Length: 294
Picture 1 (tube, rainbow, N blue to C red):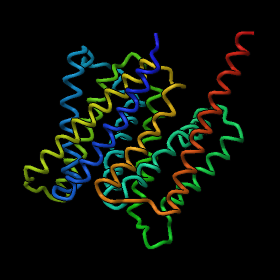
Picture 2 (picture 1 turned 90 degrees about the vertical axis):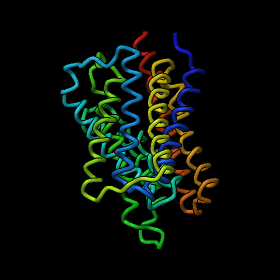
Picture 3 (picture 1 turned 120 degrees about the horizontal axis):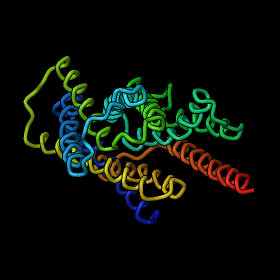
């Protein structure tokens, strides 16, 4: 039986945990660099997810792990982790997180092009309006824009790819196994980047922040899986926007970051179009259910 209240609480907690993980990584990057921070955070997350997988008996190898959807998902996870933490080095955390709210629209439109899923003109228009919101957040051509800000767009595209691939994964493959392998891949990629740019001896503060970031990332993943498995998707989907609220609060209280008026306008457009697309999909689902019952 689905428990929507429990699922909603889990999804809100997942957003807070994952945003905390990114904020902690942002602090650690200043001392140890991007690659080394990504590797350390990924290692801790991998160990925690592996322990959870062992406890749930979900860590046994599955042949489906070599399937194309899983491989694409893992590669997209690597790209998303490196791009998003890299983006946080160069732009406000709320602005970078706001761009990620465009993911549901990108995923919907990509599913239409790649998998021939029906998408009406209203959601295409919503996608264009959401894109305008992303441009308002990035503000190309202004003094506050750097090309490094495009890393947030890269992270968004990688996460959209990850979600599309996840939707095609064999449901018999244990979720925690996928999570542990993804975290291991991110660790290897981060170590490779650190090898290319140079390793440093981390201080105690950096080690603690990196370890805490990995733990928060693993907890966020577990909470998200719990919420998605124990509640209706239509009930929990809007609450994923709470991630943006956490980002705004962290940005303000930790770094004193406040989006400018253009960025606020962009954030509003992205969230509004995302909620519209969600509402439209829910309405269409009800119509399909009515037609199926008659």
